[in-house]
Length: 113
Image (cartoon, rainbow, N blue to C red):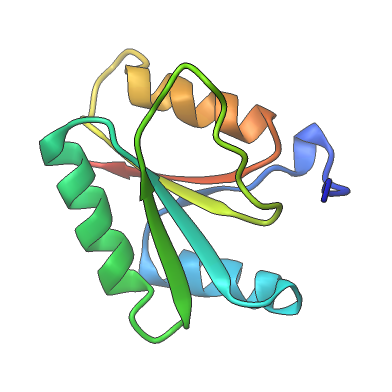
């Protein structure tokens, strides 16, 4: 099911409780909040899952962990993808992934660690 969002309307969030609750309110009409966490590395994925779990505790959210493969993983419209990345002056692989997912129409939250 395609979304009606244009490229300029893509949502990229700071991962904090206030912004996530605001995103959840926007998505209420679409059912439960769906959060996707791609596996990037053991440390970053563990941090992203822990943060996503803590922030969605009372939001009736469904969190899915998936691994990166050469074939695309079709995410449902109105999904939130949580990606942890190490803070850096230059774009990391995780930041590049977040940008690509946002261009594809998904909402992305970057967790800087």
